[in-house]
Length: 109
Image (cartoon, rainbow, N blue to C red; front, side, top):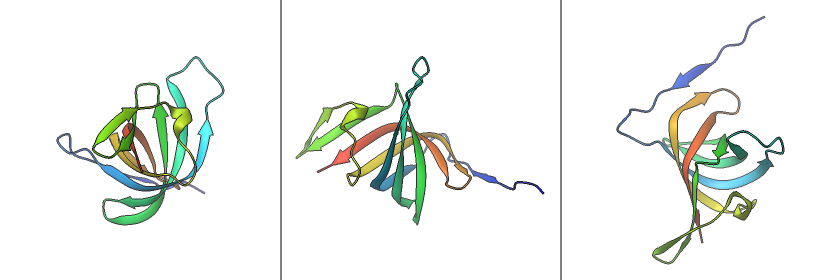
């Protein structure tokens, strides 16, 4: 018995984006590493509707959109049900569910 998986590669010039709603939030309680936690998104990735697990690092920039302004916020500001737009770094790993690492998260109001 084996495991089969593939990887979707984004080009270096293009930042893949994910837009959708947060369905789960996982806080990383281990401390001492670069991960703040992860969020599960139900949304659109490259034109396809799917759930994606998105790792949020301590380097991920998180913003709250207020009108035409963007306010810097923390991981703790994220809530289930919020609509977000996410720019990722690297590739989306096509596991189940697909996995990505956030470069920037924009919370839409």
